[in-house]
Image (cartoon, rainbow, N blue to C red; front, side, top):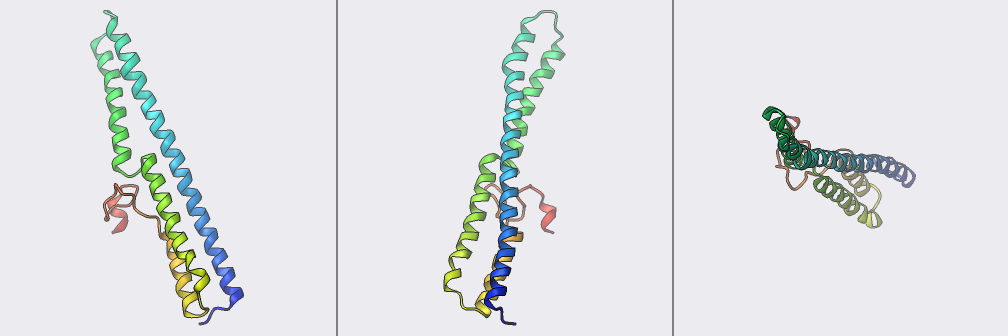
Length: 155
């Protein structure tokens, strides 16, 4: 089935809309990741450097209260490490978005040398795959694990 010039342009335009939506979603994930990391860090800093020393300085405060606030500070560190190990740190989500956009750009670099027919169909299939399903894995992720850290999603 040969694709005409008009149909080709319409199909590329539709795929670009999908690419744009995915890139926008990736931007939202990055922003959310930054906000989450800053919030967790802020809670940990306040708990560990302000609340715990202030409570420890008061003789009437129960040690369990001091320990609980110290635990919050430690949990904040663990939560940040969990974000990073699951590929959701701000740096990792930015790297994933850049890789996604670079892959799309590589595909689009070929558009000027395309011949209508089999070349255009192949181009559209690669573009569709990359735009709709081609979210690259972050460098911290393993090949059998998606960026959200869920290994079951690939099975």
